[in-house]
Amino acid sequence: MEYRLLGGSGLKVSALTFGTGTFGGGTEFFKAWGASDVAEATRLVDVALEAGLTMFDSADVYSNGMAEEILGQAIKGRRDDLLISTKGSFRSGQGSNDVGSSRFHIIRAVEGSLRRLGTDRIDLYQLHGFDAQTPIEESLRALDDLVTSGKILYIGCSNFSGWHLMKSLALSEKYGFARYVAHQAYYSLIGRDYEWELMPLALDQKIGTVVWSPLGWGRLTGKIRRGSSAPAVSRLNSKIAKDLGPPVSDEYLFRVVDALEEVAKETDKTVPQVALNWLVERPSVATVIIGARNEDQLRQNLGAVGGKMTPDQIARLDQASSLVPAYPYWHQSRFERNPPVTG
Image (tube, rainbow, N blue to C red; front, side, top):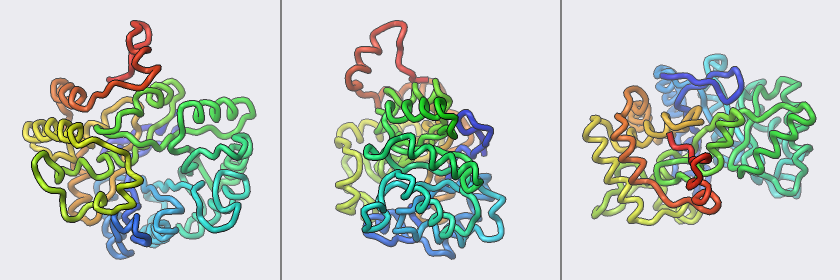
C-alpha cells in the first residue's frame, strides 16, 4: 500500500480508504449499497488492515448512525492501528437545528459521532456539505475549538464549490483558525468536472482530495456493458439512488467502459481496478474511498493499487472520458498561459 501526506498536513493516509456506507443498510438508500452487520464489518476491517489500508470513512447520516456504530464495534481493541474520518452537516433529526454547520449542530454532531464510534477523537472530521445559511466564521470557529480540545485532529469539507473552499481557507488564515487539509469530492472517469476548478485549487492550496464514488455511482463495476442488460444486484436499481446519483448518458458511459475493458485486458486487471488505478494516480488525489458489500469485492478493489499503466493507456482513458468543460473553463483552456491541469 502506498501512503501520501493529506494535503498540507503531516498526516499520512493510505492511497485507498474504506468507505462504510455499506455498513448497516438501515434505510432504503443505504440498503442498496450494502448491509454489513458487525461480524462482516469486523472481517472487512481485518482484510483492509492486512492490506495496509489505514483510513476508514463514515458519516453520521449513513444508515442514521448505524454505520458509525458498527465501525466502532468492528475496531474495538485496535483504535490506534487506524484512522477514522467521518462527516456531519446533513439533517440528523427533525429539529430546526438538527441540520447545517452552525456551532450548535457541529458540536452536537461531533459528540454524537464520538459516542457511536466509541472513541475519544476523530482523526479527520469533514463538513458534509456547504451551509449557505451559517456564517463561515461560525463553522470554522466551532471546528477550531474542537481541534483545540483534541476531539478532532484534522478538518476537511465535502462537496464544496471552489469559492466555498477558497473563502473558508482565507477566513482560516485571517483569524488563525484550523485550516481545511482535505476536500472529499466526487471524481471518476465518468465524472471529471472536478478537474475544472477544484483540482487546480487543491494543488495551489495544498488540499488533499478524498475521492468518493470513484466508480461513478456503481456504473464502472464492469457489470454494465454495451449491448448487455443491467445487473440484477446494483445500487442503480434503487429509485432513490437513480434520482440522487449524477446523470450520465448511456453512450458516454459505454464509450468509457469500452476503453476500460481494452486497458483491463492489456494489464490483466478488472474494469473497476483500472478505473480506481487511474484515479489513484491523478493530481491532487490523496486517497480514494472504496466500498465493498463483501470480502471478495473488497479484495478485488484492493487490487487496484500496485502497478502503473503506460502513458498510452492513460491517454486512451483520458480521451474516452473527456468532455467539453463549462464556461469559463473551455475559454481558459485556450490561453497558453492557463492550461488545464490534466497530468
